[in-house]
Length: 331
Image 1 (spheres, helix red, strand yellow):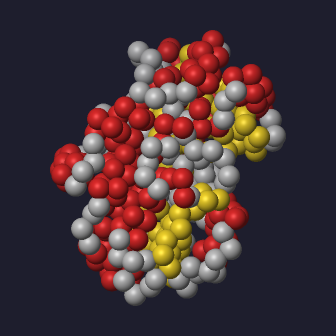
Image 2: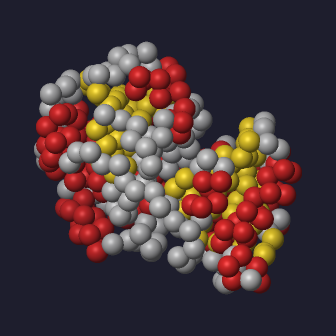
């Protein structure tokens, strides 16, 4: 079993942050609410101390439209367009350099590298690593770090609460802990609005996303007596719907929500020769085992990976891999 690779404390990280002036903060490719919220919450807090901070995106792909309300998002830039040499490179919500894409090069030219994450990893990739797999979100760890070196701002609270709400599915997923509610109340006390976050993220879907959902449901296939739901999207679907990659990010939750379904899989072909896979579980089934077969990762109930090959090849292989890892023992 993967174990966290922590070699420091949040207090020690806070002390080191005070020693430096320039920072670059990066997350993972296809950033979600927790990734972006963690980056921006930390950036706002460091800037309040007079630090110079840049938040990097792994690629130049547009982020989910329903996350554009996050304060500071418009200042984020792709890693390949940043040519500075920051004192400190901070990776949040991402356990490997590979998932940082072009931004990983920035880490190589930084004096100090730090990883703050809630994904267990077999390898420590930074100089300082604080990894807590039991934390509901990376943003909750970032929030605890912020309190170590200063008073959180309203902007930081909004970003951090967005990460916590989205990564716990509005406090409905199995990763929701008693502490999550306590920390959420702290964030609200510093000015974050759950109503705003819910309205902007959960009640603000693009028309293109709804069109993709229609296609997805038309192709829905159920395996294992209805316990495993599967569907897929090809490149032409995105083109015909006027959709971007981010429009499909939350669709796997639609398949998970079907009555009787325990595991959901969506395959999305968005680039030639690459198929993105998203996995979700409703019970204690560990879908990260499937993701690791394709050098992906994530959590027990939510994981992702990239399949290198055609969509047809992915369709013929990946569902069988899900059945092998998640249902074969029940046969």
